[in-house]
Image (cartoon, rainbow, N blue to C red; front, side):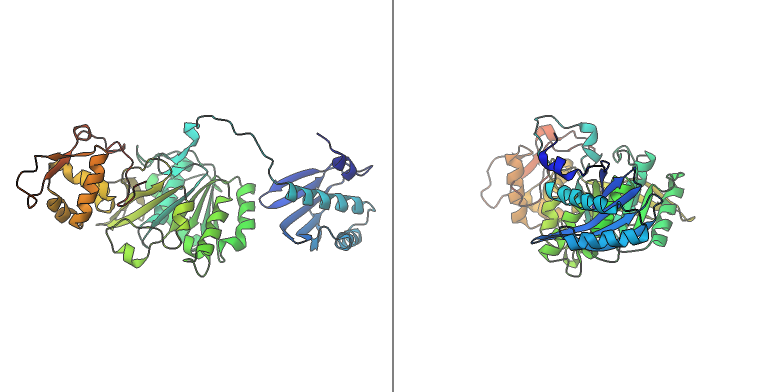
Length: 443
C-alpha cells in the first residue's frame, strides 16, 4: 500500500532504489545510477539519528565516508559536496537526500506486527542436537577449564557440516556454515584442533564452511560486525568461546553478562556459548552453574554442564542437562581418544553419574536393589536428610516405593526400591519417565 508519505518521498525523475539490510547495515542501492550508500552504526539520541555513511560508485570505488546526523541539512549537504568533488555528475543531491530519509524510516519503523497462529512445532527444525541444543536458540555449555568444551563444540560443528553423527545418540542436524568467535585462543590453535578431529574422522568439511574470528574486545563492542558476518556468510551455527571475556572486564556483574547474552541471541541462529564455573564448584560433586550472573541460567534456552575425566590417552566428557524449557535429557558423554599420530577419534561414551542430579543418582543406585536412606547417603556421599527429602519427592512422582512396614520403631530405617514401571529402562531415553530436576527444584 502506497501512502502519501511514500509519494512525497519519491523525487520526480529519480529511480526507485532497493533497500537491503545485511547485519546492522542498511544498503540503499541505485542500480541505474550505479551508486550504493551504506548506513551503519546507527544510533539515535534525543533529536539526532547519526550513522556512518559510505558512498560508493558502480565500480565499487569508495567516494566518501563520514559520520553524520541524518536529520541535519548541513550534514547531508557536506556529503553531497564531498561526493560531487570525487565524482562530478550533478545528480548526487536527490540520491543522498532520499537515501538518508529511507535509512531513517527503515530504522524507526522496526519489525511489523504479525498475527500469531496456533500450530504445532516442526519437529525436524526444533533441535540441532535432539533434546540438548535447540535450533536457532542460545545454549550454554559450561565446565571447568580443560574439560573438553572446545573439542565438543568443534566436534558438533563437524558432525553437522559432514552429516557424520558422532553416534546414534549424538546426531547433529545439517549445518551449512559455522562462525567461531574466539576470545581464548587463536586461529593456529583452532586449525590444529580441527586437523586432529578431521584426521580422526577420515574426512574434512568444504573450504570456507568454518570461519574463525579472533575476538579482542567485549562482544557488545563488536556485535555490529559480527551480525554482519553472520548475515553475509549465511552462518547458521555460532560458537562463542567463551562467555567471561565476551562479557568484559567484570563478567560476574549482571549487566555485563546480560549484555553479552542479549547480543548473542540477536544473531538469529543457533548459538553454543562456552562458559566456566568457579573453583569451588569445579571441585565439588554437586551440580554446578555457569560462573557469573543468574541471567546466564535464565536467558539460555538450554544449559549443559561438562565434566572431563582423563584416562590413558583418552578423555571422556560427561554431560549433564541442568536447564531446559522442556524435559531434561539423561546424562550423556562424548569420548575423545588421542592417537599417537595426533588424530582424535570421537565417539559416544559412558557418563559418570556422580555429577548427575540427585534424583538420577538415587534411581541409578536403586537399580541394584532396595536400599535404606543411610546406605544411599554413604554410597552417594550426600547428607542423609537430603537423601530422605529426595526420596519423598521421588515417591510423590511414583518413581520409588517404600518396602516393608513401619515395624521396628523410628530407629529402624525403611528400605526404598524402584517402582515396578521403572525397572526396565533404555538409557538413551528418559530413564525414569519424568523430567530430571536438580535437588531442591520443585518447579
